[in-house]
Image 1 (tube, rainbow, N blue to C red):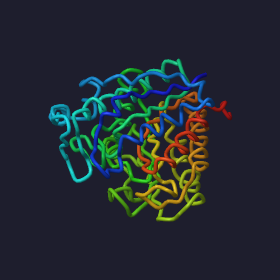
Image 2: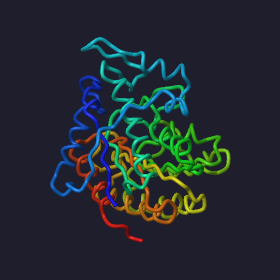
Image 3: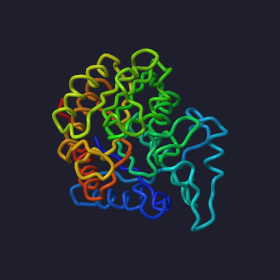
Image 4: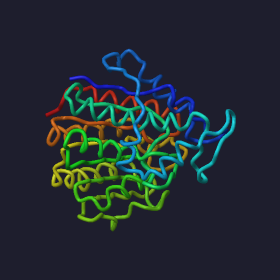
Length: 313
């Protein structure tokens, strides 16, 4: 079965200002890499906009209104917090990010494709239900997981996050929900300050694997094979969403975990094996971080190349 690529040019209209790491070039780098001939087998579609009802499964109305009503004049920027910026095109870009995640769930759960990769920006895993944070406006992975429940009856949902920064926003949504598994490897102590071993949620369904700076491949692999994936197997999810951040790459300017593109191919394959065990191989992957453009392009290509490979089960 095929792999769906969801993206949208609205992501190129989300301006963040000179010197900001979460910049337009990120999306250009990913889409250019995935335009190579080896990716001709991808099904390519535009990400739709999410509805307010879909956003409202995670975010309260007042927060949704505050984001969507922030429409700076052309050429102007509004700073929501020290890191998170909105321009004229940001609201639509954020709606397309959440909508792409939802469309990916629909495509995978319907059986139309085996996997989906949603290449949109801004990212989402730092956005808490009532607060923007860390470049993120809407909590796309959590929105996708709740859509899988509402539209497809997938009660036991899982989000797996290998971004170098802890997905505090996804964790906040999952915290009091015993049927929402969140597993994350991330540099620690580090931004945003969450993600310690003691943070386990209401029913132990949150599994954090903090990694020291310069840990490298061995510690990263051990975190997943020794901690996160065994807990995922015990949880036995109906749906797997991936927060695919590539900023743990050794060339990334914002972190120091010292991974490379082959390591992202490895974790993608390990998650695919888990999906074969639990969700008939179905995966929805969402682009999160990655701020060195060459490293991001190579890592996203390695991720999607692995998604396209035949099942290993």
